[in-house]
Amino acid sequence: MGLREQLDIIKIIDPSAQISPTDSEFIIELNCLTDDKLKQKRSKQRKLQQKALRKKQVKEQRQARKERLSGLFLNEEVLSLKVTEEEEEDHEGDVEVLM
Image (cartoon, rainbow, N blue to C red; front, side, top):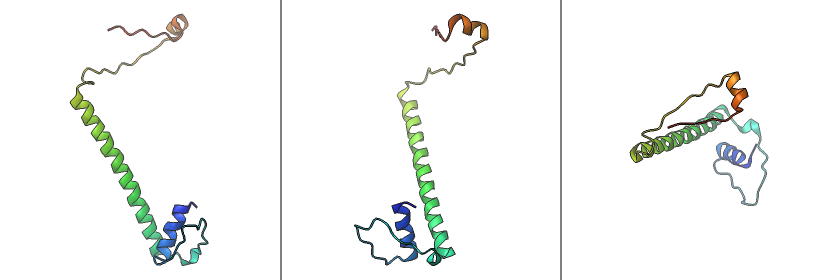
């Protein structure tokens, strides 16, 4: 368990616990961790994951909006290429794009 997780669990078990800045490892008695406290920890973790996901989605939406407003990608086309065995032997990976 990482240091951050240990600190989170300590705060859940005993919110008034005093932690020294020089402490690097902690002994955690799991019998002090009740179901309610465990649910609280899971809820907090779920909220943080949802927040990170939302932040990523907002960033992607913002980037898409910038691309749309800039107009640089208006004429963008997606092309699919199919290489047959005969062509592969003749050109060995050369691809020419004509516009």
